[in-house]
Length: 293
Image 1 (cartoon, rainbow, N blue to C red):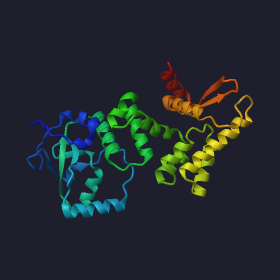
Image 2 (cartoon, one colour):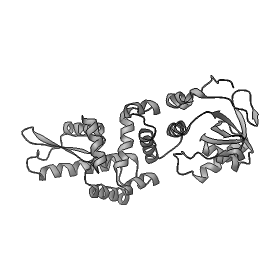
Image 3 (cartoon, rainbow, N blue to C red):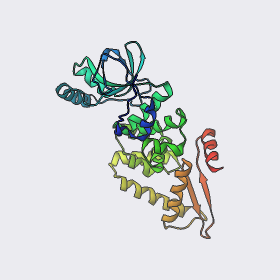
Image 4 (cartoon, helix red, strand yellow):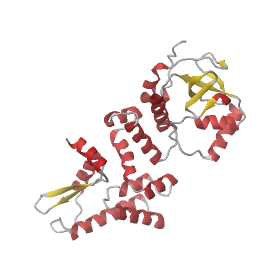
């Protein structure tokens, strides 16, 4: 059993660190460079696959390319037993190869337990696949909760800064209807970020309806939210009149990012004010408490 020293740089540092135990395993045929050719009949799907949908048209395009040029990028599998393998990454390539009529495809064979399988699959898909924003957010959440990765480590693992990761995770606090609209492409992540700090769910849904019905741009929505916020402040006693305060707004956004939940600042004319922190349930309240203490 020989140790493979050549790593795929495109996998990123997070996934590369998980592949310290990469091994070459006998299969139907070895290419001599650590890649084995495995019959597709011996490969089963990855139960930890974070991708939920595969576009048929894209699969057909990839299948046509594979039929002409072969599968250029090997898949990654783990060996389950004699003549039995399980996908770690490359389900789309495997499906397209089967459509193209290939009987065997190139693969890297890894040693991995279920925990490592999940982490590899999540990180590989985040870095390589064209996932929608909600699928990415759910992958980040699974890395935090199921893989027990600390939030300060997550950005490094997936090659993103912490603010970017938090922006994705915050999408999961939106109502299901809006999350589904992001998945379907009816609205963009930019639209969602424009309304995510709105505390009232009914108001969030109203903004979504206006985006959908009037084909509003992200800038349109941002302007609408700010104008409504100014009106709300003007109507509230003890709140600064009609001018929107960009400094307060920036502070509010920083609070929201740090705590992972909508935070609103009410600023009086004398400079005093209140901080309103929103949460959905006791679990979220406990998570906020842990971050504050």
